[in-house]
Image (tube, helix red, strand yellow):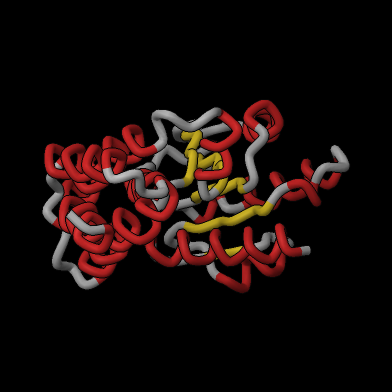
Length: 220
């Protein structure tokens, strides 16, 4: 089986949400001596792009995304199994800390975004909901993340997003992190006003914005 056929099979396994097929294709890729990172970007990520498009158009739903993400992760584990920790870190698109802000207990939107990030090869640390600002900062430092993502689903909890930026500045570490916010009442203007780096109103867009911001930061 040629390289392009294996890429196509990897892509198909994600679109079909078929973990067994994903594992089979990943093993074939290893046997054929293909570059694991290329298999992720030209095969698995292509399949996830199809899924996120279908999700945005209402043709796929949260359980579909979850199953596609499971297939994705199973294949990635096989593809990167023989890589060193350093190589795995290079293979990862980046590290993201995600949470619902202090005082807010809504997490459906956050969970969808988390799934999309994981399925696009980001390493995701999910702190859950109603997370104190101090915990967000502590864990970001502990995990050495690239991006901090915080979701607010109520107007009354949006202030916590501003507090995160304020605390990072106070601690002198604002420049270390890309900070992205979202949630039903959150707008691009709000994010700009409080000094965040990025905003998105869909899960697929969150991934695109994160990738773009990381490229700019790493190129700086």
